[in-house]
Each structure stands twice: as structure tokens, then as C-alpha cells.
Length: 394
Picture 1 (cartoon, rainbow, N blue to C red):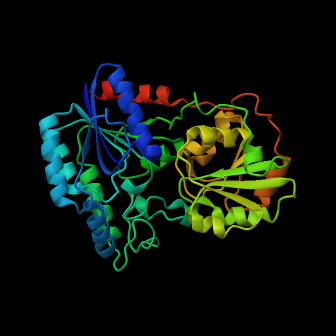
Picture 2: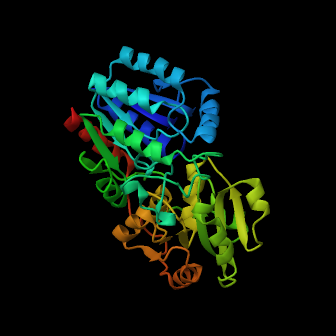
């Protein structure tokens, strides 16, 4: 098989690591594989890649989006050049990942895919493909995506539009383009996301659930002196981890939580900016983003409980990493964030935004002792599921 993946990121972040993991499995099985990326590439030089556009193109597309509210409809020249490279490489199947990174033109891409009749697998890492603007809508309880977006209440959220609301145009254009393909299989990491797709304009396409996976050779219970190093040797650790601590990740809720927990508890947050660390209450230890997954595994293993007060999420890998390290997870009743907790039976789910319930769940949480993994979702097994899906699609 000749498989091309298209993603904003290659190697970087959860989506970039998934693309890289799929590539590795394809190569091991003797197939041809290449990853096309538009925003960032941290893959080893041995991985064949195609850069979509040039360095400045995403900034131009991003500005275009802020002025017009038409994310995914810039990057005309970059996309035309890229389509010529697809023609030259001749993939048997194309796997789409995140397309709303200001790097590709949807209209040109989907007309090309339709005309060439190329089988497509598309992983929905969020809900953006189904809406006229936003990647998530459940936090505000909006259901306009089902029948037609308009007057978007999240226009100023990512992908930000400064002046106009084109959500109605976006929704109609996306529906026209995305439903035009003859051979499309949609993959969702969570059962929650699969239900969303089944209620959308893409409901007539086959939907497969393939969970996000993690490196279970690294994320496993381990001994370390990390509690002493961060100055919390005698404390019970309440851990929070995020690649970016946007408001939707619950940073404000952690600040409120710090006031409600007894003194023997210490909140530790990983992935903060220097500015965010400076603004934390004294009861919280803030740590900058780390690129060391070994360091992350040590923090997960040292924690007594992992808390994920996210307000919008699909199937967060941080929950999987904590459980694999033997640490129970408490999360809000949000999207697919609950699924690994429910399947493992190791943790608790509380009402979104209820910080009192969050504090109570932490205090009554059973001590699992970090003796063994509580749940494992191995990335290689998930990547093999993609390999089998490609075979079926072809």
C-alpha cells in the first residue's frame, strides 16, 4: 500500500505523534508511507515528509481567517502546489487528520479527492469538520451544527474571527464538500465523538472507533525522587497536565480547588507558561511544559490522583497516561474524557464546573498504591487497527 497522511503537525503533539506512529507501523509491515504537514514537523529526518506551503503561509491564512471567518479557504497557491505533489506520489489511500491549522484549502483538496476517486480515511480529533466555526460546542450547549450554523456564539474563539460571522456559509460549504466523496471512512477516538458524527450531515458514511493510544513502555508505574525535587515529599499530589492551559482546560477551577483541599494535598500543574506560573496561588506548584515523556511518567507515578477538569475534549491521552502509571483519574462529565475512566473503573466523574464535588472526590479517592497499571491503551495496537482499516478501505 501507498499511504499518505495529511496533518497540521508531524511528530508534534498528540495528533503529530499519532501520524508518526501510524507511519512506523506501515513501514514495519513493508508499505510505502509519507506524511504531509502544514504547521510543524519534529519527526526524525528518516521519515519521508512533504511540507504544505512555506513558513509564512499559515500566518497569512490565519490573518485571512480573522478577517473573513473562512478558516480552511485560504492557502490557494500552497494547496495547488501540494496537489501536484500528490499526483506525483500516487497514494492508494489518503488519511486526513486536523485540517483547520491555516495551511490547506478545503475546496481545492476535496474537489481533487473527488475527481481522482481516492479512498479517504479521516480521523476526527475534534468537531470542527461538522460546524460552521468551532472545534467544540458542548460547553455552551449549542446544537446548531445539526441543522445549520448561524450567528455563532463562539466567533471570537479559535479559529478567531475579528469582524464577521460566516458560520452559515462555512457550514453549508463544508457539508457540500465533505459529503461529495465516494470512498470516505470516518474514525473517531471516542464513542462520544462517534455519536456526534452519527447525528451530523456525515451520518451516511461508515464510522469506526479507534482510541488514541500511548507508549505503555514509558507510561507505567515507576519509582523516582520527583516529589522531593518539586518540594512536595510529604504531600499527597493532585496532578494536572495539559499541553496548553487554555480556559477550557480548567485552570481557573484548579485555582478554586486549591482553596478547598486540606493542607496535606499539593496541586501540581504541568505545561504552564511562565506568566501563568507567576499568577498561580501559592498552594499550587507550576511546572513548564516538558518534552521528556520519562519525566511526565515519573510525575504521573508520584501523584495520588490525576485531575482533568476539562470543559471540552474528545479522548484525552493525559487520562490514559495517568491510568497507565497506576494513578486514578477524576474528570468532569465532558465529551469523551469520561470513557477511559468508565472503562478502567479507576477514578471518578463529577459534574462539569462543580469544584466542590471535585474536592470531595479527591478526598475520598481510594489509594491504589501505584502497584500496577490501571488501564492500558497501547499506541502500537491502535496503529495496527488503522493498518487493518486501510486494508478494508482498499
